[in-house]
Image (cartoon, rainbow, N blue to C red):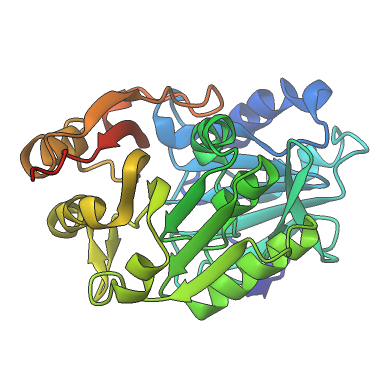
Length: 324
């Protein structure tokens, strides 16, 4: 949903300094803009007073600003000042208001002319600006993608809650023998197929299963066993998955899905659940899994409370020996 910038209120709270603060932080990044997608400003990490509700991402040539709550920023003043200093590499500046119904978007500069892509390490991922809340690629998951690149060669991978299958694209490009992508959204999986094709990876090594994994595991289990299992569920998706009560169900399934030895990447983006949540579940429900460690967060995503930030845990699972 695209709105005309002229329809926006002049200021959200009457403050005239918010736009200057935002411009100051962005100006530090202008010389660093390249082809690689990255986060330029992570206000949600609460390390930038006055910008806690703002994030800014770079998906060349689009500068993408997201507003998560009412803020003391005069967007018209910001727009007028911004166009005077934008580097030539920026063709579009898009503002998405996630705190409003339907998350409307407004072009502050330029005009959208798809297609657009996220770029990382020579791979491309399709983006959909102005159509829905999530673009289709999560920048903060980069530590997990780098971990997978180191693990994937020759491995059979299970990618649960695959969304647009970025993990699968990374795994196959790093030499995985196969990836099974599971999501309950056929639209997301179709975008995943497109991402594989976009990167020349539509070679039959990827499978796509539309499943509600809390209700059906048969097809997933039959395509195993898996050498790498990735859990990247939503923290709260009404009617399908609520991390606080459902995450343990994933962990309990590992023995029937995993190869004799398997690596597990257990992910969770839920600020309300502390960093000990996942280790606590493994200790209770799968104590034979060895915690290798929590992956460090990406430097583009500083957080004043790391316990609440994105959680990525690496576990090694070894099946218990059978007794004759």
